[in-house]
View (spheres, rainbow, N blue to C red):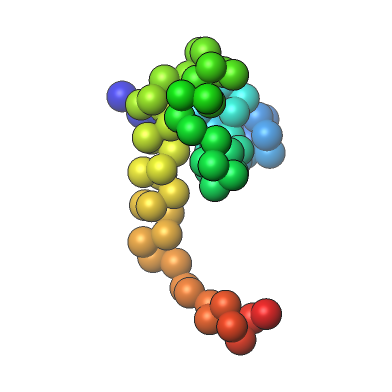
Length: 75
């Protein structure tokens, strides 16, 4: 089942968890801020661990063909 979708009428077309207005970006920001999956589900009980995993898979897939910038040079 596809858990990640995008609709130009929802959050400007950002990828979201299907059936919600919660963006992949928001979930990734929470995880990067050391919020656990269990804490996310506690705050957003309509989400599942599979939804959170789908966000990580989406992000990994999105980076497969990206051009990488040397962070040291960019800073």
